[in-house]
Amino acid sequence: MSAHRRKPREPKSPVPASRSRGRSRSRGRGRRLTRTLLASGCALVVLAAATAWYLYDDLASSIGSSKALEGAEKSKYGDVNILLMGLDSRRDQNGEDLPPAVLATLHAGASSDVGGYNTNTLILLHVPGDGGRAKAFSVPRDDFVELRGVPGFTGKAKIKEAYGRAKATVEEQLAAQGVADPRQLEREGREAGRRAELDTVRAFLGVPIDHFAELNLAGFYHLADALGGVPVCLKRPVKDGYSGADFPAGRQTLDGQQSLAFVRQRHGLAMGDLDRTKRQQAFLAGATYKLNQAGTFTDPVKLLKLIDSAKQDVVTDRGWDLLSFVKQAKNLSGGDVEFVTLPIEGFDRNHGAEINVVDDMKIKRFIAERIGPGASASPSAPGAAPSSPGGAPPVPQGSAQSSPRSSAPAPAPSRSSSSTPAIDGGGVPCVD
Image (tube, rainbow, N blue to C red; front, side, top):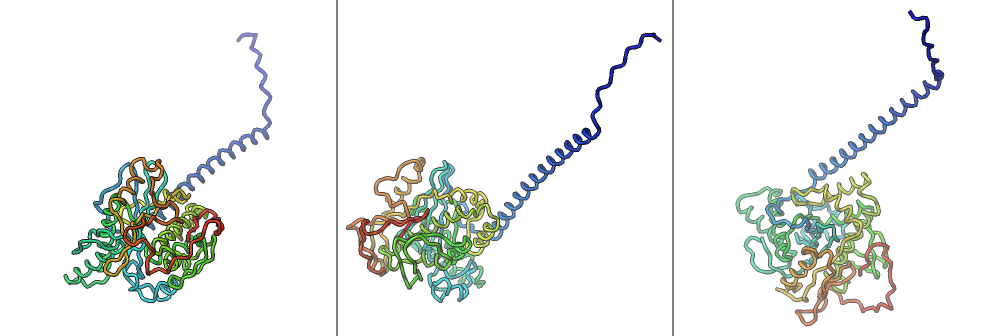
C-alpha cells in the first residue's frame, strides 16, 4: 500500500435537518395541491357534462315530439329555419281540457272549445349559417293563402286554419274506420294538423323549414312565470275587457297572466290583428332580453324551471338537437334578432270572414331578398316591412279594403311625434 494516500475531500457543509425536512414537506404539499386542483377540475368538468347531459336527456325524453317534418327539404349553407307555431287552444298536449281555474286565470273564456286549433301565432326564425343577424318573420294569421296538406280541401283559406282543418278531417276519417281511443284520435289528428300547417307555410314563403316548435295558449303564461316576468314597453296606456289587458304606458314587467293578455289583445289597437303581431314580437324580444340579463343559461335552477315549463306546453320535431339550439339561443338572447312582419296588400271579406289580401309572389321575393345567400350582410330592400316590433306592415292604398277591420274599434286619433313623448324601453322595443 502506498505511503502517500490522497487526502480525502472535506465534506460539504451538511444541510440542517430542519431545512431539509421543510423543503420536502413544501414539495409534498405542492404536489398534493396540484393533484387536488387537477382532481377538482376534472370533477367539475365531469359534473358539468353530467348536468348538461341530464338536462338534455330530461328535456329530450319529456318534451312532446312530432314526425311532421320527416323527409322534408332542409336549408342549405348551414342556415336554419325554425317555425314557431302558437295554438289558440284551451287544451293540453293530450287534448284534455285545461282546468277551469287555469282558464279563468288566462282570461281566455270559460270553454275549452273556444279558439279551436287555429295557429294564431306564426313566426319563422331564420338563423344564417354565416353567423349573421337572425331574422324573425311574423306571418299575420288571417293571410288568405292556398292551404296545403288538408285532406279533401283545395283552394284558399286563412293561413291559421290549415292546422285545425286537417286535424278535424283526419279525426273524422279515423273515427269512421273504427278508431275510438280519444288519445289516438288527438295524437294523429294533431300530427296531420302540424304537417298541413308546415306544408302551407313552406309553400307560401317559398323556403324550407328545418325545425318547428308548437306552443299552446298556456305556454306564454308559463314561460313568463318561469322567467320571473317578461319586460315590455307600451307607447300609451291600454285597457281591453276582451283580453284582460290593462297596462300603463312605459316599460314594465308582466307576470304570466298579464303576458297572455298582452299578446292576445287586438281590440283597441288601430290595426287589430296586425298590431297583435307586434305584441307577439315584443314579448319574444322581452323574453330573450330577460334570458340574457338574468343569466338563465348559466343558472341551473332557472334553466330547470324553464325546461319544466317547456315540458308542459311545447312540441318539437323529432331529431332536433335541442342542446345545440340551447347553446345557439344563448347567443340569440343577446338581442341580435331583427323582427319583420310580412306585408299585406289590404283587407277584404270572404264568406263573411275578414281576411288579409296578400300577393304570394311578392311574399316569396320579400323572403328571398332577406334570407338568400349573402342576404344577412345586405341592407333591407326598398319597401320592406318595418324591422322592429313597434312598426306596422305596409297596406297599399287602393287595393282591396285598405282600412282597419270593422271588428276592431276605430283607431285612436293620430298623434304627431311632437305631442307624443319619447319613451325609453330600457333595452326592449316600445309598441302600441
